Every structure is written in C-alpha cells, then in structure tokens.
Length: 266
Image (cartoon, rainbow, N blue to C red; front, side, top):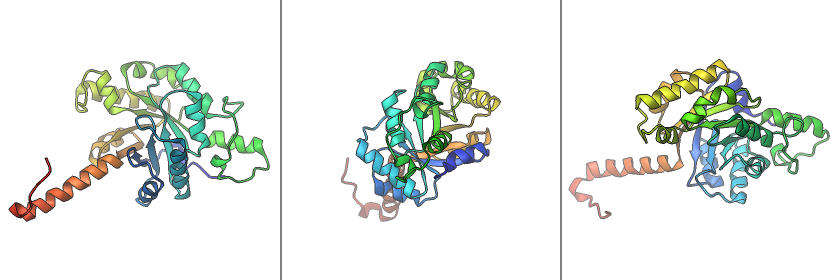
C-alpha cells in the first residue's frame, strides 16, 4: 500500500514543502506543479467551491505524480472530511479548530473503526487495488491519513495544550491572515502581537512533539519560521505565482521597451 511520505518525513523531523492550489484546480495544473519537486499540494476547498468530480481528478493526478494531495475542507463535518479522504487525499486540513471536541471529531471522521467512525465505501485511497484483508488495509489507512488542524485565533492558542491531548493530531498549521485579523492587527504579519502568538504555537507543539507549519507567500517569509522549528511549509499558491510572474514579466519588458511600450489597460 502507498506510503504517505509527507507524514513519514514529518515523523522523522524533516521539512516538507507544498504549494497552494486554489483558483486553477485542474489535473494538468496539478501535474505541472508536481514536476517542480514539491512534496504536497495544498488544495484549498475552504475558500473555493471545487466540484467533487474535479477535486477527485486533481487528487488522483497528484497521487499518480507521486505528490501528496492534502485538502483543506470547509468545516469539521463528517461528509466533508470523510468524502475528501474517500477521493484519495492523503490528509485533510481542518480550519477554525478551537476545542478538544472539534479535534476529536476531526480525527474520528478521518479514521476507520475502532479509532474513528469513518465508513468504508471507496477504493480510491487504495489506488483501486483489490483487498484480500480489509482489517490490515483499514489499519494501514488509519496510520497513513494525515490530520492537520489550523490555529487561527487566540481562542485556539489558549486551548492548544488541551487540543494536543487528542490522539491522532499530526500537524498544527497557523492560518496567518485569520490569526492577524482575530488579534486585531489584520494583515500585519510583523506585528509583535502576531509574532508572539505564532511563537507560542510552536512552543506548545514542540512540547507535545507535534509538527507545526504556516502558509506564506515566499521562501524568504518562511525562512524565519523554519529556523524557529516549523516543518510543514506552504509556499504561495497558484494565484500568487500567476500574478507575480506575469507582473514581473510585464514590468521587465516595459523597462527596456520604454516609451515604445504603451500601457493601454487601466
């Protein structure tokens, strides 16, 4: 059975790097991004309405390319978590977790009995291979599925010690923008209040030996947090890369074309 290499790497204390997929959720885009050498695709189904068929196709393309598809769901609901894993995702990212009850539900919905309550009705996570022993297969799937909880508020951080008592939480991921909004410093990711909150997440998680991560737009922005111990790094997304690359190309052409290059758009 296929190994979740992201989960294995994190358990070994290694760094994993992913890229966000948000506005161009397409199997060919997934294949192109897989060719860059990333470890995982962070497929955002919280802020984007991805139809189930398209989500499954992107997830399966990532798997075929040897990249872990990890999907952010919309909420702590059984159908959202279980159906995403049924499509073949290696893991789920659950937003806005602020209590042990939410963490327990998230883990329970991601795991088959006796660990959780997830029903079994798909072979996509098994790459459509016929199973001779379901006990072993389901045990292996429980071991391999990755459960990532997002810390996006002061309430979440205040409850984090208790949340990490829940067995089965694999990663805590900081939601940088939402955390800044919750702290009253919207978008100010250099504010001391925000920095202290993120450092507190790392401190608590290190004490519980749970990896931490964050989503930021560039390697330079991620580096200080890697140096502080974060190992689950999401560097930009398709929108940021398309916008920034196109902007840079246009600016460079206009820099040498000068007055011969007229800007007709407003």
